[in-house]
Amino acid sequence: MKNDLIDVLIIGAGPCGLFQAFQLGLQGINSHIVESQSDAGGQCNELYADKPIYDIPGIPHILAGDLADQLLTQLKPFNPTFHFNTAVTHIVQCDDSTFKVHTSTNTTFHTRHIVIASGAGAFTPVKMRLEGIEALENTQLFYKKVAPDLCAEQKVTITGDTADALKEIINQQNTAAEITFIHRKRRLPDDVDLVAEITRLQGNGAVKVIQGKITEAIVEGGTLKKLLVTDNNKETIEVPTEVLIARLGSSPKMQNYSDWGIETTRRHIDVSTNNFESSIPCLYSVGDINQYAGKRKLILCGFHEATLAAFAIASRLNPESPVHTQYTTTSTQLLQRLGVTKET
Ligand SMILES: Cc1cc2nc3c(=O)[nH]c(=O)nc-3n(C[C@H](O)[C@H](O)[C@H](O)COP(=O)(O)OP(=O)(O)OC[C@H]3O[C@@H](n4cnc5c(N)ncnc54)[C@H](O)[C@@H]3O)c2cc1C
Image (cartoon, rainbow, N blue to C red):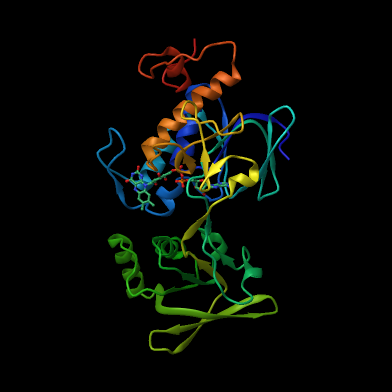
C-alpha cells in the first residue's frame, strides 16, 4: 500500500498518457504513471513501432517507436514516477473524493486525481498454449526481454514471428550455450537489417533456425527438458531447452469502465470537452478511450485533450489562483520548470 496522497495518477503510458505527464509538469504538478507493459509507448510501440507516422504537427514523419522515445525525452525534466508491469484493476472513490487505485501487483495508490489514458486497453503478452508450461513462467519461460546473464551457458529456445523474437536472438547470442529459433510463418518479420543479422548468425552456426510448430513441452520433475517441434515436413524434432523465450506479440484487454461507476458509451468513457472530466469529478480521461461528439482516435486529438485536462487539474489543485495560459517560449516560470533556465 502506497500511503502517500499523490496529486495525479495516470493510467497508461501510451502517447497520450506520456503527453499528459508532460502537460501536468508544465503546470508544476508531479504525476505517477501506471502501465501494464514493461515499457512506454502504447499502440505506437506494441503494434507499429517501425512504421512512420506523418500527421504529428511540425514533424513531417517519425517512426512510431521513435515518437514514444521523443515523448519520454520531452517529459524528462518533470521526472514522473513510472510503475511498469502493473495493471490498474479497479478504483474506489473515498468519502473525501480522493481515490484508492488497486493494481495487479497488489499495490494501492491514494490519489487526488486520476487520468485514464488506457487507449485500446491494457497490453499483455500473448501466451504459449502448451500443457504444463504455465508453472514455469519467470523461471524457465519468459515473455519479455531476458537479461543475458540469466541465459549464460544455457540451451535457449526463442520462438515468435515478431521482430522482438529476432532481437532476442541478438540479445542472447554472446552468452547462451546454444540458441534455437522456432518460427511458424514462412517469412521472417519485415526488418531487413535484423533478418540479415540472423541469417549471418545462422550461417556461422550461432543459431539453429526451425520453421515449425511447438507441439509439446517435456517437463520432468517440474523442470522443462525439451520441446517437441513439428517442422514443415511434418517431422518431429526434439529441441533440448533450459530457457524458453516466447516473443509472440501482445494484445490489448479493454476494461469495462462502467464497472468502476464511470459513465460510458459503447465501452468508451463519456467526457466533457471543456476539461475532459468524466462523470466522476476529479477523474479525467484522454486519448483513444474517450468518447464525445466528434471524437477521432488520433494522437494529436489526445494531445489536445491532455492539455485541457492538465489545466483543469491545476485549477482544482489551486482553486484560489487563476491558471493563466503561458507560452514555453517566453514564460520564465515554464522555462524554469523545463530546466531551461535556473530558478533565481
Ligand atoms: C497500425 C496503427 C497505425 C496508426 N497510425 C496512426 C497515425 O498515423 N496517426 C495517428 O494520429 N494515430 C495513429 N494510430 C492511432 C494511435 O496509435 C492512437 O490514437 C494512440 O496510440 C492512442 O494513444 P493512447 O495513449 O490513448 O492509447 P494507447 O496507445 O492504446 O496506450 C494505452 C496504454 O495504456 C496501457 N493500459 C491500458 N489499460 C491499463 C490498465 N488498466 N493499467 C495499466 N496500463 C493500462 C496500455 O498497456 C497502453 O500502453 C494508429 C494506430 C494503429 C493501430
